[in-house]
Length: 243
Image (cartoon, rainbow, N blue to C red; front, side, top):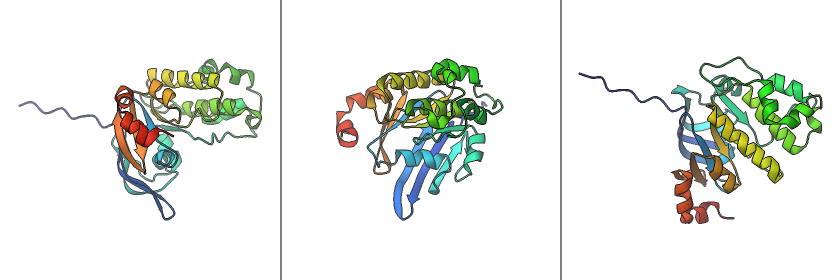
């Protein structure tokens, strides 16, 4: 008699996740799965809980109910460095570069050994993505423009050789030309085998780079599906995304 094949665990899974800021209940039972080779965008208005979801995954906000796992291994409320070692990279909205260190030194801070089957990245590859950083490699990060700091933060996270990247509002406040470069890089790292969870306010960018979208409202997921399906659901767009 043949043994049924077991389904591999999702790369990242959230099951019934709740989170609070003080007495404010922000996440109300989030269920989310990210498979290998996916780019999943979390969409929604400000205050919907998207950034809190990212920070809960990274151990920066306490999960008060439910669980989070990487490849079936529980990481709920682990310390951020333990979660990073498990294969997660995080690009925060605030960028958080080391302002008094040069571009080169910031990149060296991010370098980690190869991680199992995750793609391996080098500083030279980062400079291929963003030649502007190579030009400014001796400049202190605090003197970079907002767009350059965004590039640097993405590169520093990639150099940790993650299996999955959490990228929070990467195009906020950036010039259209830099927005396109960031979108191209997200598509390329996905092509090379890194899964991505993206919080993005610009719907056109999110739909262009995503394999799947999850729309959030009031701390819950209210729609999930491929970008084309969301495009057809103008009721969802109007109720949960339109400004």
